[in-house]
Amino acid sequence: MCFSATASFSGGVVLLGIGAFTLKSARSPLEWPFAAIPVLFAIQQLIEGVIWLTFSAVTPLLNTVMTHAYSFFSHVLWPIYLPVAVLMIEPAGGRRRTLTVLVVAGAVLSAYLLYVLFAFPVVSRPTGQHVEYDSPHFFAAAVMTLYLVSTTVSPLLSTLRGVKVFGALALLSFGAAYYFYATWFISVWCFFAALLSTVIYIHFAWRPTDRGDVRQTSGILDQPDTLEKRT
Image (cartoon, rainbow, N blue to C red; front, side):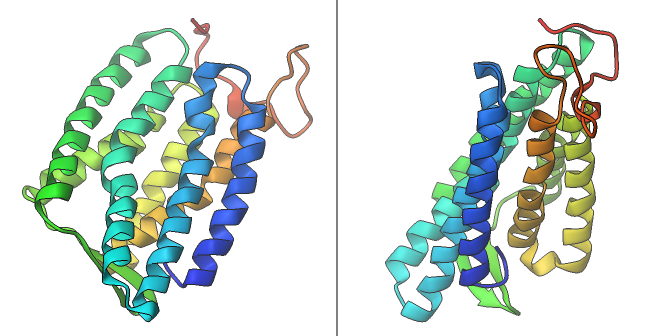
């Protein structure tokens, strides 16, 4: 997390637990990528915990390696991974065509940011009880817009309500992180997004069982907004 090494490691461990239960709740291989999101966030938070330790231990090489590992998650992985994961669980219908376009857009963005990650060194530093990532790249406005579309609009377009809720909360957390923590935006938004892992767990765990019955507090998040059937 963006506050301290202890918070990052604690959050990572908690997310690993949530991720394990979420993966266990997945019913088919097509659901595994979306169900694995909490685990991936956990790994990202654990990496940031190590980054915090490198500041006090004065280990520049480890700091560089961990900073770029964290940046791979935040910059390269999520723009392509999220739309692909959403597409894989989306029922048949017109939304799949739109999501496919977002997958292509996310792939282009991830490829560009991967190039940037190698071409322009990313630097992390502790400022104001947060980790600041200095990640220069060209066409910042266009990149940020495409990143936002890939990571938040793709789940918002899903017909599954739980996925849609995740996208809506991700978009709201994006705005909050940028407005209140612009300097530390990368770290803070990833922290907020990690908290949304609970929504993903609810999406899989609180839904109709194979026998068709619905748990008393569930079912809602797993229902499609349309009458389209799964492929």
